[in-house]
Amino acid sequence: MNFDFSVVAFGLPILLRGLVNTVLFCVIALPSGLALGSAVALMRLSHRKVARIPAAAFVEIIRDTPFLVQAFLLFYGLPTFGVRLSAATAGILVLSIHSGAYFSEAIRGAILSVPRGQMEAARALGMSYLRGMRRIVFPQMLGYLLPALTNQIIGAIKDSAVLSVITAPELSMAAQMVLGESFSPVETYAMVASLYWGLIAAVSAGLMRLEKRIFRSDAVVARPETPRLALSAIETTAS
Amino acid sequence: MPTAVTVMLHAAPWLLQGALMTLETSLLAIALGLPVGIGLAVGMRSRLRALRGFVRIYISFARGTPLFIQIMLVFFVLPSLGLDLPRFCAGVIALSLNSGAYIAEMIRGGLTAIPRGQIEAARALSMPRPLMWRRIILPQVLALILPPLTIEFTALLKGSALLAVIGIVELTRSCQQMVASTFKPLEIWLIVGIFYFVMCYALGSLTRYLERTTQVYRTV
View (cartoon, each protein chain N blue to C red):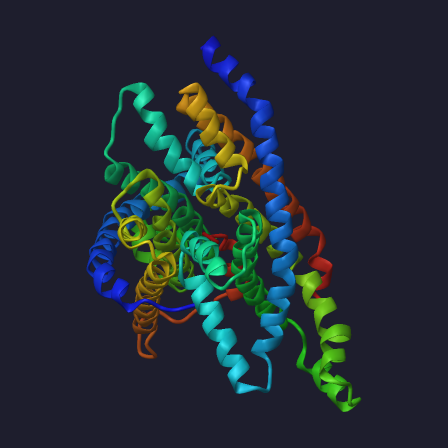
């Protein structure tokens, strides 16, 4: 096997543009997914059935079907109803919805890791539900939330590679463009894999630093015991 | 919606065949992924520094790049190495190499549950390391990771949808073919979604059942 470096010179600029798009997709989709996930998590913890059941159904449906099928359904199924989305919009939408379901599970687990009495005390002192959530529960759940969220964020970045099948213009789509010009699949996919690897290594290193910063020894929030094994059981993203 | 129902009924036998293929690839992938994972987990604890380094890089790569890209890489790299395997083999190899890394991480998690004293006892009895792994560590760890293993299997089932892009006719690919012949994307993709949902939900129930029943092993 000979590695052809001329492909690198030709393909790298195109791939780098694809990488920028991948980052852009994630920068738009992940915060929306986080907002959706928070809402769904709160709904699932509600004592009203009208909120709890749809939220649980949403999470189950998203988690039990492949991301690829969700993308196809949204991109090719919606036009049946007269809704025509561009590949990029559909991609961002499906990534937000998909990551939202996974985020909601991480957030729900984190909220449940804080003893019930904390919220009850906050409510007894006259705080509203949302204020109690923000001031009392949220700071205490961070230790559980951040590692779980890191896993899901990385999972979502990896999932975004699948969006090339609906022709969303991100990194793996750029790979197909380079491939079409150069006919050197090994070089092209080696470069693409390295770019993804670098991106994900950078993101996970950044998030780990953030985690460390929040739990400095002099921080207000004490580092809780994080059940790492339990977390790995929640994490299911292989794609 | 009578047309939608007829389309779905018409497509069902085809898709059932695809679903069988999906199950087959996933089962093969986990069956091959388990030895890969065990090998990596043992390598992680090896005395050879180079081996530990290799395992670390391997796991970092397998978990740090999209499965989609890994499938493409295996699909294209194998022929250029002179290995002309059918695409089915390439797909299964890609899936099991990927899941091996996740299984290795599970085993590593499970290893922390084994009391150090057992390893020390094995050493004190001058048990060779391979025997220690086989007789002492692995039986306990494998019982421990059974529930997460079913989760990994579910993930593989969903991940195997990606094999459609290299032309393996599993559930997703057979669905694409159905869409091409019926021009009913919504109905077909919905029914495929239902197929995957039923399989994954059943597996999820199995996971929850195993999590309940294997509690006994956890308190070893």
